[in-house]
Every structure is written in structure tokens, then in C-alpha cells.
Image (tube, rainbow, N blue to C red; front, side):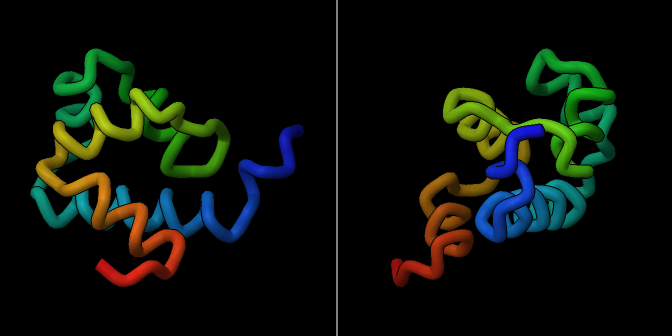
Length: 80
């Protein structure tokens, strides 16, 4: 297993994106359709079983309607 999947930053990223998805009123299956991924892919990411690459991260943010910069600032504790 890749240890970085379980890093604090990765956990904060998963939590933030899941929160944003729910705030947007989207179910996993709806986000999957918007990103051309499977619902299982979304579930595995949200449960910490896989990592998003940068392209998928930005795609997910845009599909949810959240700003990737804001999410990264939150994850890394940076001020905007």
C-alpha cells in the first residue's frame, strides 16, 4: 500500500471534496456521470482507497462547482 494515501493532507482532501459534493446536493453516482468515472471510483476515492491525480482533482472540483485553489488552501492550511 502507498503510505501517502493515508497522509493527513490526503485525508483532508477527501473530507473537503466529499463535503463539497454533499453541499452541492450531488450523489456519488451524479458526480461519476459528470466526471465520466464510475460510482465505484468516486466511492474508492472518498473512502481513501485511491488517490486522484491532478487532472481528476480539477475535474472533480469543476463538476462539483468548487474552486480547486480554495480546496488546496484548506488542505494545506494556506491563507487565500
